[in-house]
Image 1 (cartoon, rainbow over the protein chains, first blue to last red):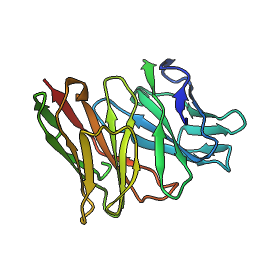
Image 2: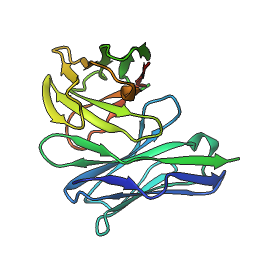
Image 3: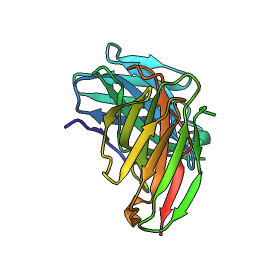
Image 4: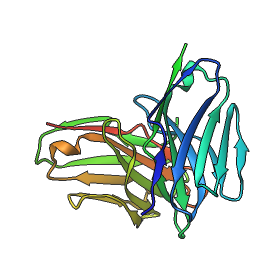
Length: 113
Length: 113
């Protein structure tokens, strides 16, 4: 069956360093991928997305890389700040005429001041 | 603010009881999703509606049901509650097409005692 999984449950990063959060997916029919950030006590918040016809997309301090060959997705956060501390989820959106979004288990990012 | 409103924020009830969670989607969004998040767990997809019609079902128990009304708000009904149903329940909305991001509410925290 399809699944979206994350390599590391917790990532600790020094403030100012770059963070890389990885995600593996298994559904080759997925054509749209999204990263969400969930802060304590809040709902997930959209960060950045990428379509399957792209391999890189940049936002403000964030970059998403997609490697369809190995079904791998990563989120890079530049100059990590304390406010980046949260749980990060990758999600995949598969084809099928409607929008079915499957979430991975999440990676907790801890920023060390 | 995502524009998605969930009520109530907190709910404490006893086993065997029935509760209704309410969600008002973001203005203009036709699709509503329900997710369950247990402690330190990922987001488990329950069910999706698009413009009043059920579009997809995930791991939703038979004791749970949902509907989307003509004004597009949605309700998730949980009955014969068990201790294991204690969780955060999130509602999200989107335009409904592949490639449109989900916007999440801040969830309803259900505690079953």
